[in-house]
Image (cartoon, rainbow over all chains, first blue to last red):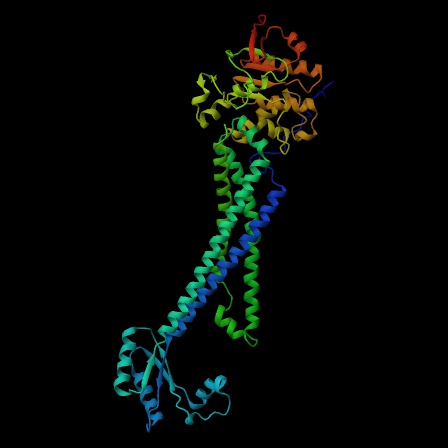
Length: 316
Length: 212
């Protein structure tokens, strides 16, 4: 057989370099694409969980702050007592108390409106032993100021009872903390599931590229070098998957924020806003989601590297 | 543990020597090559490579010794998703060398083996002879002290086989110890100076060649 005569002047130059795009582990494979899809879905769910936990934690902070900024004085009418005079006295004491910004007694009309959902229209409150309410706006939330106010009220208006909403705030806080803990647990489970999927994919890739691993070994590649190649390969897959999942989650929260802005003008919007705030994650929320994506990318690379190194240790 | 493929063998490969390893199919030629390449541990006995007992080598030692050995596989073992250039440069890349530092070297070697115009072609589009030369170039690029070639002429016509053998002889002249596993008697007869290691029935017989 005559071999072709090569003219060095006409010889081609290599148009590829290892430093740029050449990967020793083939980039596109069915297993690789499947892993990208799995990572994208898991990252999306992990970002949703993290974002929801952040929203609840933020909303809880606002709830607690709002609830603790107010205190309520209930004045219970006794027999033959002038309830309006007792209320006026209590308002006067509260207004002058240290740490109180304002004290406002609910008028008869306001009390009726407050009870309307439970007792219906056209109610004559004077026929019922309904306590009168005084809403006290606090400048701060210092326990000693509230104790002084409680003491002053007890001596001057024994019929008045000060409620600082502490128990209610603690319940809200406990509930919000529980939601955050559950979200953190779900997040951890998703990361664990993702780690398991990455482990399977890495072992699959090792098996599928057994020939490449063996050739690399026999041409003098160290375990570290081979593991580094797999790490680069899987980090790229992880980056692609986490970007898809992370961007989808960010898009979801951005859309939810816009929708909640629109819902706020509709009936029932108040309840949603009270529960989750405005659905707006804020810059720190988006930074947190970006951190989740970065962590997923790093985790994918490092985990596959560790698995490959362990496998190579068993080979000669 | 299965039956022993070879046993009670005692031989050494001298630096800058040239030998054929021959014998019938299934006699253990490839097993001996794999033992010399440190890709297989002996079930008993010892293998010393470059003065080191293979049983006492760490993973790092194995890697360092393999970098002093060039190997041509019978089935080439080129990576299909890389170009010919990238395949030949693979051992240098595995050593951690920068591409800019070895590019000219690889191009020169590819031209020397007649693949100057096939650098960017992936192995699946190369002919059998071109694959063979690419595999040989990959083994030579690190300038090995020992070259192991398993049936390097098994897939090519007699003319190309002689040309490839002359390539190995040239390498031997430049100071590399060469071991070629083959069962092609005619080819061996053309290179009478070479030592012959004949393996058969699990035993080894050595015939010294005439002076080069």
